[in-house]
Length: 243
Image 1 (tube, helix red, strand yellow):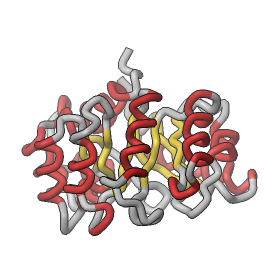
Image 2 (image 1 turned 30 degrees about the horizontal axis):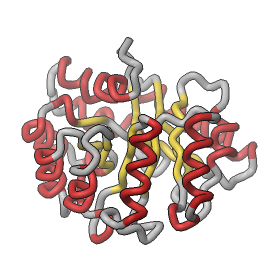
Image 3 (image 1 turned 30 degrees about the vertical axis):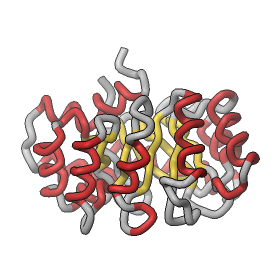
Image 4 (image 1 turned 180 degrees about the horizontal axis):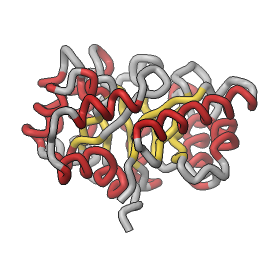
């Protein structure tokens, strides 16, 4: 089974050469971490360019394309998701509630999840306070049990308990280790609360370093079986890469 990182970012609005350099830097750091595959998405900006990112990732077997849209753009945004998945190969949809002033339990939040269900893709939702609160993510996910959702940052740090509660209430929620890995007690607590099959490694590259995040987790001496699930097997299963 492969080792995998569920979250890394490239500036999709940057010139092609800059995007290629960013991809090379991500893969170099994943090499240092011993991670084979990275799910890569556009930097969170008002107008992400999914087509440009797909062009950058084309032909790189280690890169898994995750699209992101500004849902306030209406029909154009939802067409962008469909094209990204059906024509450009996206496997994941990133939802950023705070950036786009998105009420997750309002009509646009439901429309995004309905589209993900229709296209049979994984969803990654940013967690934090206010619009991104883990309990709001949980309330949305309750309506879409067929859609696997990775909650990035697992509510780190003020809302970590709420993230666990949301995951306990919703079997389709997986807790992502982005940033939380640098205070690995939060990850250990999540594993104990929801099981190692429901926690997924992510780096948040290039803001955080994948090699340091993996090292922080390995130092917890979780055991090979748990590490294998956390560092790749769980995500591979969600993405249909488990053979």
